[in-house]
Amino acid sequence: MEWKPDKAGETPLYLQIKDYIKNKIETGQWTVGMKIPSQRKLAERFEVNRSTVVTAFDELIAEGLLERKSGKGTRVKNNTWSLFSEQPPPDWSSYVKKSIHIPNLPTVQDIHKAEPLPHIIRLGTGEPSPELFPREMMARVLKRLPSRIRSLGYEEEKGLYPLREQLSAYMKTLGISVSPSSILIVSGALQALQLISVGLLRRGSTVLLEKPSYLSSLNVFPSSGIRLFGLPMDATGLQLLALRKHRKRQNASLLYTNPTFHNPTGTVMPVEKRKLLLKICEEEQLPVVEDDVYRELWLDSPPPKPLKAMDNNGSVLYIGSFSKALSPGLRIGWIAGSETVIDRLADIKMQTDYGSSSLSQWAAAEWLSSGLYAEHLGQMRSSLRDRRDLAEELLRTEFEGIAEWVKPAGGFYVWLRLPQGLSLRELFEDALKAGILLNPGHLYDGDDDCHLRLSYAYASVSDMRKGMAKLAGLIRGLASRR
Image (spheres, rainbow, N blue to C red):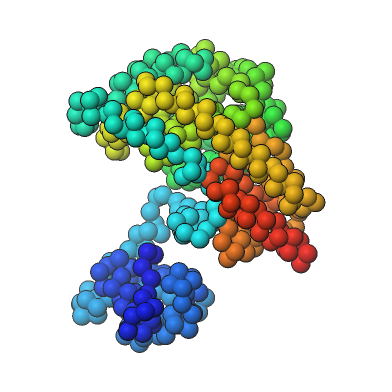
């Protein structure tokens, strides 16, 4: 909610809040049957006393616009035109509940609502800090585009050809030989996963993945009727014995893996294990989706080559993106794989959005062809290395005796292990009240009750120092109350 009552105005605050809610209801933004935010949450967002919100609610209830039921919160009862209508208005809430797409986890919804708040220190956010945005380089790229762009119409179904040419050349540097016709431009890695979920798998299929995994924080596959089955990890990544064991038991259709700077653990799978993983998948005829969006963010030494670079049978679908290393707002990623698969996914993408932003594709092509992307990566690694080292220093100073972790070699994250018995939900809520936003481990593994995904990529250096000290204090406080 961007709106806040005017505390300097002549109209009483409760009336301002009443009029705001009434307008939401009368204009159909808050529909009949919809559960509205609690009095406590509204008081926090409007920065007023709870009693002020209670008074506004009471007036709206008296006017017949809201109703309050014990244990079920407050809901929209009527709007002014429905009071005079012979037929009841549509119950949009029932449509929402019956829709096929599963809503985000409640904690994920809370995170999305809190992220825009200006006072929040985001210690879990998986994107580069605004401080790391290459403003001057981006200005140079955008300045060159008018002479490059012939039009801003729809691009061909697989995406802008000059960009796919550049990506083909770029992936050769990673050991991947793939032609432009085997590359599909997508609006970020998330869309790649969505296309795979609806374009390659049947309802009732099973996808194997690491446990924990970023994919578990999304409902992309479950919303398509596809089951996720987590496989245990060790210090070198996915446990291959578990892969052999569960491939047949689960009748799995696909393996999703993030072997390089794994999200959320930061693990890097060694080269020999990658070869063995591919061998097992080839023997089991199990296709692989390799999520490699953190590859270029190595901080100490380059990681092993991608699985796709070792793939001689076309069994690996490779997902890359500019979101982590350059800019999430560019919304440009790509899938590389066999032409049969790419043709299928391109057809579905055309049915979905008729192509990613043409302007963004031209900008991405210019980043690659100009050499600025390679230059930027060097600067990005240097900045992230400093941030990683600062996070390590703060952890040693503030978290001694209350947490365990492994120093990451790249990516954005520290996978922080906390003492058993702490309530991660309570910690999340206490931290939010203290102005700190966290990503608890259960987002990536529903059974996890002792990890936090800490990011050293987003918060400013001063916020990181302040936030980590506050977080350590909250953890010690919770531990002392056990």
